Length: 160
Image 1 (cartoon, rainbow, N blue to C red):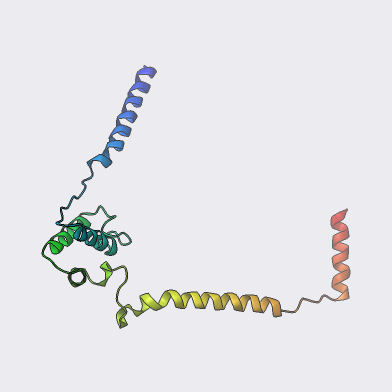
Image 2: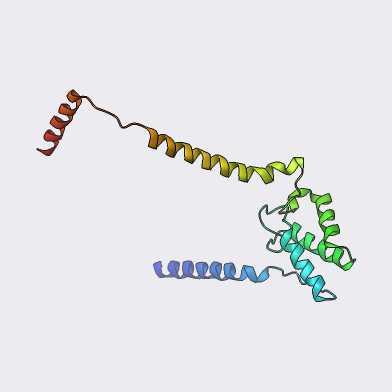
């Protein structure tokens, strides 16, 4: 009876393992036909440069989200229509905002994105400088003769 249960459990685990290994095979791969190598290179460049709206920090080329697939298809269509890279970027920004660009333009509303990393770096360096400067300029603590004798007694008791 126990052997039968173990055998069934083993078969179940093996079946789940096989299904789990086969799932990536079911993932769809987008294949786009281009008239020339230049358009194909433009497609790869734009898909690598634009961010997936759903995945946050993944570009369109590396995302398997349905929206990324739709946007890749849209880029392919726009390249087929003869649009320039700038026109395609403008179309995506108009539709999804500056979020789809890994390098948004420097404007008043995006200035924080450009200035904050450098400002935080300088603030952090200044704080480290202050901590080091204060530790070096701090005077060592002076203990009185009474405290020194008490410390000696404590050390003697500890060594016994």
